[in-house]
Length: 436
Ligand code: GDP
Ligand code: MG
Image (tube, rainbow, N blue to C red; front, side, top):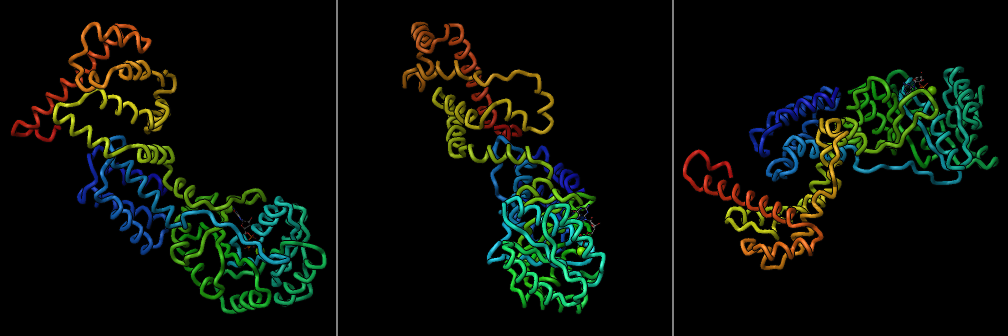
């Protein structure tokens, strides 16, 4: 499926230090192929991967995330944007508010009519279902059974073959009987044909619904996009309902429909049961496609909290052998800002199981912090002056003991030693330059 393929694509980037033209090209190609394989329209896949590439190039890789993780976040953002960015609700305007359903036969219109009726009824609005599929007598019965099941009245005229008349009569009936929302279920053909289009166009013109929804089977892949385009050209519908997302559907339809017809997906249907209806959330869909929710939140947190300027400043000080306790403290704060330590480690793929029983103490940094905070400005900037009596004062002031203060001093000295060695190596001519 798409998420395993993308997974493979991101592996190309694993272990790379930064995102460059060379290492991103292969990944972009893989992502494009994965999207096309998932039934995403070729042009849409090309557009989105071009955007992903622009976005990725020249991005500084944060020290806390790998290029692969950063790419995942970029792809996630682009897919979310592609599917409309934010959730869009169905519009209920008018008295009664009228919702017209369109789509091919078997796409799931009648089933969706029952689900939508249930959904709206839960909001304490009275609903009337209207059977306008005049060609198959069984269609009226199907809607009646559903209506009974969900406790919603069904309007039908078994002898009348004119869907325009039936829907007009139904609206008049709704007004008289105080129904606030009217859902019109219509006939569909197995393929787009002119008579069906004319018929539903006529219904739309006659009743001017507040919402015309196009219902489409997500399993039909590339055809779903073409059908959506044809219906939209004739009906100028307001939103899309994507059905049968429970099965083996590859989800590619969700990605391309929005981009091609520029209409929002409003609902997704994930089963035959009346409860199997969900609002469509672009970000959730992108997460589902990527299957990497944890990585995404890790990257998001890192991006929010990581102060790049501060990182650069400290890097400079390390290079000049000027790293002091102020800088040390600032590093600790950066780590703390990222949140709960165990959560953070747990978000690294594969780590959550490994650390399940390990106790990571969030307070581990506390004594270190209070010792540093007990230092004077001068002591922080020039740790060399911290002699025995000053150290005893620090222990007292921070509520720790002399042992802890000495440990910290030793660790800090070791750290500075390593930094000095690295700086020396990088200033030596030769192959070691890239180590710093
Ligand atoms: P219509 O011809 O557009 O009215 O389509 P129907 O509502 O009659 O649905 C056609 C078939 O698809 C029926 O067997 C439904 O039970 C089934 N169906 C509808 N929605 C879903 C769904 O979300 N998931 C699954 N698995 N089946 C669905
Ligand atoms: Mg039907």
